[in-house]
Each structure stands twice: as structure tokens, then as C-alpha cells.
Image (cartoon, rainbow, N blue to C red; front, side, top):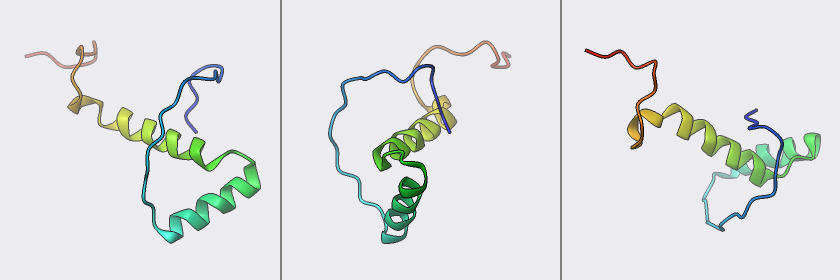
Length: 68
């Protein structure tokens, strides 16, 4: 689970995401067990992908990049 400090209410934008029936079923089961909204799990999944693929995004290089 990805947590970034205390959870604070932030403005969110609405978007449409198409998921498979299996993903929908599993997310609903997870919600029933944890009471965490499905949308929160989707946002966490997006954060995981953005973190994993951050090298493809523009921005400042981190200090752990090997320089030649």
C-alpha cells in the first residue's frame, strides 16, 4: 500500500477507466474486506506505475543516477 504522509483531502478530477469484470469483482471484494474505496485502490495503483516509470517522465535527475 502506498501512503504519502497523512491523508489530506485534495481536489480530484473525474475520469473514466475501463477495467475487466475480474478486476471489478476483485476490487469490490477487497473493498468489502477493508472498507477502503475502490477509487483509492485505483489511485494507489496509478501512483505505483508513475513511481516505477518515473525515468520516462521529465524532471530533475535524482542523485542516485550514475553519471558518465
